[in-house]
Amino acid sequence: MPENASLNAHLSLVPLGPGDLIDRAVRFYRGNFAIFVMIAAPPIIVGTIISVGWTFLAPSLFTHSASSDAVDLTFYYIFVWLGSLVIWFTQAVAMLSVMGGASRNFVRHLLFLEPITFRETYANTWKRLGALLVASTIITVVLGTVGFVVFYIGLTIGMVLILLAIAALQLIPPLAALVSVVLGIAVRAARLLGLNATTLNSKIKTYNIHVRA
Image (tube, rainbow, N blue to C red; front, side, top):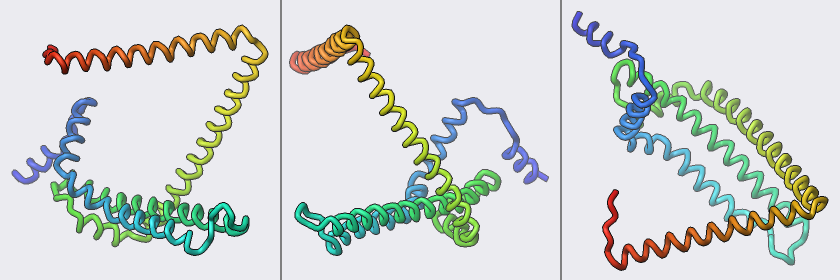
């Protein structure tokens, strides 16, 4: 009976504010920082080694100097970019799979106070490797597609806005002059503030002035 009471007290739902959540999260990560680094290290280290090896392998297979053939240059860049894409995709899937294995260990730590360990995390990942790989692949494809679309939409909108601004400044010369004056004043003010801050800092160090907080 006392064990049930202590377990209920541990699992009791208490409303927490943003400050309490941040404080608990910081203390949790600080207490298990080394374990989290060890858990995340293998996929990152292996992916980085393969990526560097792939980059060094490309020049030995294709010539990419200024005097090389256009076909060799094309195959060189295709080899490098395609390899980098495959390595990134595989590394992202591996990281998400490890995170899925760590999530079960994390939940058991919250419910039953079991310690978070490197061995238990990768054991959970290995037990559910197939399902984790499928879920991680779907998540990586969806996030990669959304990120690609958002990036190029934002890039297109930015280029259109820049072209419109250039066209507007060309059609209205007084507006172009006004913008140039404002930008010139802003740049000079920034330089002046930076110079004053540097001068003040040097004076403080020279005369050993103690500034009150």
